[in-house]
Length: 106
Image (cartoon, rainbow, N blue to C red; front, side, top):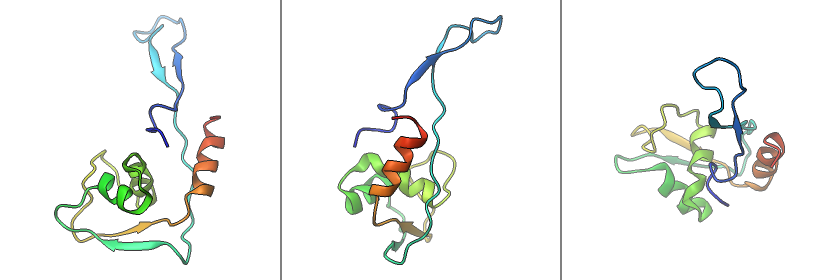
């Protein structure tokens, strides 16, 4: 799966009289909600854990770090989760990716 930024469309701002007129911007990204499933994995984070490495370990794709971040309501844009936190790692991504693509018209 490509990086989430590679698949998001861009748009030009309107031609109004604002300072951002005519600039190229990313379209908003919409994320589906993901209900917990009985087969989800849970891990306790350590000091050196990173979301991209966790995504690679579970999905074989480091670019899916945002799935782990979104599911666990991690904010702030850091790839380092808080130490000592239990993270939920969804096992089945097929439904998630399909919902994500549908919400974002991909």
